[in-house]
Length: 165
Image (cartoon, rainbow, N blue to C red):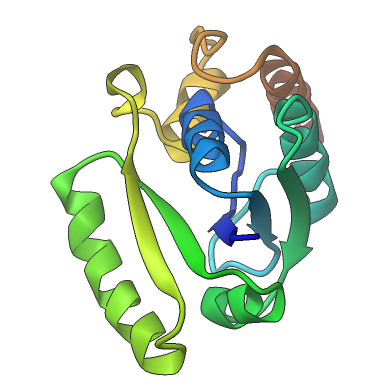
């Protein structure tokens, strides 16, 4: 059985992330979506919340599971027996960033490959950061994230706004 790790912060998970997860699920026997719990960036959702939002998003993909992790992604891939790390690409800018990571991962664990999947055309401009910004200012995000994620995002932003007052 070939296992792949699809890792990220997923703050929040988007339909672009789902697109990559669905396609990875067709290529690999088992896909683990790893939710990185200690990134060096400010997150809106807690690790637990992000894991639950992703679990609900991929619940219809029987060979996909979701787990939180910390530390180096490639070390976690090794720990779970993944033969590949799946990375989604939206643009050539993403590729530039990813190449250095691939080389470092190959240095650390040469037996783990990286597989790039270009996101589908309708999601090439979508990023979690952009989704949060559009939602913060009342823009329509319902065709860019699953409905349960849009509701959670609106609720979280409203709560943050009320706390700031």
